[in-house]
Image (cartoon, rainbow, N blue to C red; front, side):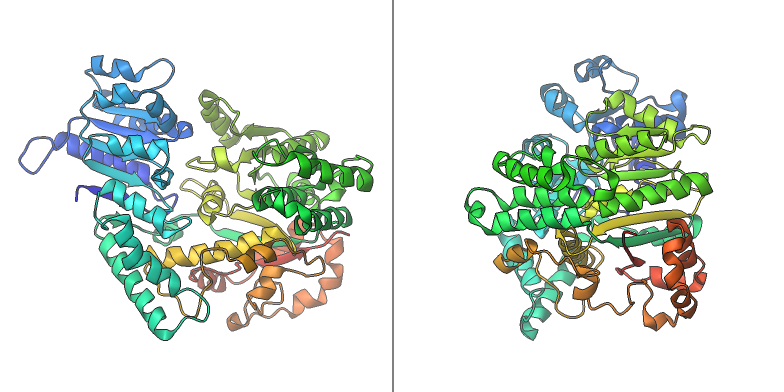
Length: 563
């Protein structure tokens, strides 16, 4: 085995560790001579400049100046560069410069955000695999995101054949592990699944190095994650029910469930976004868009305002409180550019200075946007961030508040986005708010994330789960349940998990006295959003540390209702 996966959680310095490794291997080896001569570092386009800067920061220009492939420096010209043994290139640029890369003899390959190589059927995986570089290091804080087959391909990329063939892997590991997680499985099936999970974790630990954020928790500022379930507004409820009825009717034969799910998620963000269903997702959207746009026009007379969305009302309240009562900056994250457009309107209406970073942002401008936002003297109060384009690798410690406005099916993507502000260098207490709309597909997505997170803990962290856990694959009944709506529930997830915290995020085992909060509950509507949350922040620090020890929990749970 000549490959390895550095799977430390986000913010633990994977980049610096690799720079130290590269410098060491370029200077020495077991027999006195250097172990390597040339290194290829491949990263997402948004991180190439960061890698270049980190090399300069830690090694200086006199020791090493990497060859950074960009518009000025072509990959084809690297052969004429005798100064630098290190090339930094983006995945996209590598695809375009593949022939030039193949002509260069590299000794070490480093792939940042390596979970991009989880699909063996895409062109990137094929090209990266074909590179004649035996020593490979893959960086990923989330090596297991959706399923075990993706995990297999990452391992097979760094050490070909280490887990056998895909067929052998499915038989020996994937099938028994997943079967053991099905509700109602026999004790024998469960025991076999736990055994194979332990074996897989032990085997891969020989070349996977993983450390969690616990190792530096004492050196970072405090972090508080708050899950806030917002009630849908009447117009959201009406439009959501129309969409569900549309799917349950004859449209199911014409429109894919993914298209309808996409529409439901946008209704949760703001009902007016149904007029832009085809902006970000291909598929059979025209019929669905016309159907929902008609009902939107009927319900709203095409009048657009923030009061039509429960989540948007909450964010508007949070922004107002932050701007008036603190000097803290905030990052608002969404998976939809149309939602970011909506927040641009809100920021302009409220006269907030803001910046925006999404897929349309020029790669050369991204670093300047980040630097500008992180500058304490900058007047920019809000950063609107696309989870797809900017949720990976960026350091946004200029903000101490982050709102995850909508969620992805992949829990790792959400974790990446939420980790942008809780990183080394952050001096302020961090507050992260994950927003869900009660009784909707957003809560179903979050519940699925819990299942996937359990699978990661089982295989990567080798934590054998107790009790029967839900399967990772969606059954027909689960698919049907996806297109239901429970408008009168406080929280679907909270109820289904049988949590006994009464919606306050505090479990009885901690013996927390909530009498004062109960006495003040009638006055909550008169308090600002920040004041309500500050009550929770004043809890004893020992109890907070105890809560953080748990692998997964509803760290703080709350509901938000329109006045």
